[in-house]
Image: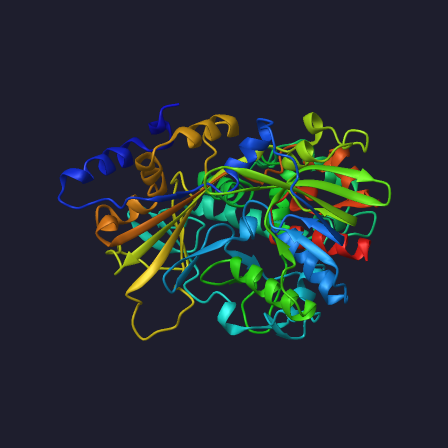
Length: 538
C-alpha cells in the first residue's frame, strides 16, 4: 500500500519539504506492543518444552484494565492466592511512558464522570482516592487534581482555534439549530427506560435495556440513522463521525446506530466540584489507574510477586481446574515456556487472542467467524516539546486539541492539569489516530512494513497543520506506539452476537473478562467484567 494514501496531499508535501529548510525532523522510537508475540502465536511457531510448572488458586491471563480490576477485587475480598500473567504489555490499552519526569499515555487518556449505574467504577475510584467523598451520591466530590479544568477542548477551523469541538465559527443559523436538535434528543435519552424497566443506554452496556424498540437501532449504522431522522448539517455529521472514530476506531458509517447514541446518552455522571460532562485525567492518562490498582493490590496482598511475566499460548480445562501453557519471549525473540495450573482461571485477553488460545470455545457457543468484532488499528504518538510552538489566533492551548476535518483525532497536552503562573517550558503532546481510511487488514499490513519516516509523517498529521515547521523546532523526542489490533469496533449487529453472550454467561472453572464482552473498548466496561469475574471465582 502507498503510505501517502494515509496523508493529506498538502500536509505530505509540506512535511517532505522540511528537510530542505535547515531544521531536523525528530527520529521516532517505534513501539509495537504484542506484535512479536502475537505473530508468533498466529504463525503457530514451534515452542520449546516447558521448563517448569506454577500452581495457584486463581490465575488471571492478562494485565490490562480487566485483569487488574479482577486482581484488585480479589485482593480487596481478602483473597491472596492468585497470579496475574502480565501478557505482552502490562496495562494494555491503559499503558503509559516517561520522558524523564514527564509521564504520557500510550493508550487511553481519560474517564468520563461515572453515572449512577456505574457502581463498580464509583466503588473503585473511592477506594483509590479519586473520589474523596459521596461515592454513591448523585454528585460525588472528586480529587480536584484529576478533574479537567478549562480550557478543556478546542477546534481549529478556518485557520483559528475556537472553544469546544462542535464547529460554530462560520456556521449558519440552520446548522446550529440542527446541532441543538440532535443534542436535545440525546439529552432526552439519558433518563429513558425501556419496557423491561432498564435504562435504554447504560454503562455498563450489559445493564442496558433489551427493549426491541431500542435494540433494533443496532441494525442500522449511525450515519443511516442520522439520514433517516433528517439530520443533514455537514458540521454535525463531521462531529459525530469524529466521535465514533475517537471512541470506537471507525467512522459513523460503520458504527452501530445504537452505539452512536449510547456514546451521548449513557454518559450522565455528575460531580460536586465539576461541571456536567467533565472528564477525569492524569498526565500519563489511564496508566495512573494501572499504577493505583497495582499499589492497592500490593498493600492488600502484603507481598509482591503476584504479577508473572509471560503470555498464554494454550488454555485447557482439566479435571479439577484449568491449565495454561505459557511462554516468555526475550529481546532476541527466543522463547521459553512453562505450565500454569489453577483451580479457577480468568481469561482477560482480547477475544481475537482468546479464540486462538482457548480450546473448546466453539463447543461453548463462540464462533470466531461469526462473533469476533472488527478491530481498529491505532497510533498513539507522544512528542516531547521543549518550549511551546507558536499558536494560531483564537483561544489558548487546551487539554484536547482537534483539527476540523483532519484525518487524525487531535492531541492532548500532558501538562494541562499542572497549574502554574506561566506555561510550562516542557510538555508532551499526545496525538491519537484511528487509522480508519482503509480496511483494518490493509492498515495492519501497512503498519508492519512502514518505515520510521512514514510513521513520523503519520504521527504529525494533525500537529503539522496546527504548527507547521515550528513543530519540529520544539519536538525533541518522539515515541510512536503502534497498536495493530487496538480495540473492538461496535459495528452494525454487535449487540446480537450469540457467542459473546455465551462467554458472558460462562460460569465454570474458566471465566472471561474483557471490554470485548461489551463491544466497546472503555475502561468502565473492562473493569466491570474484571470485577464480575472476580466475584464469580471467589
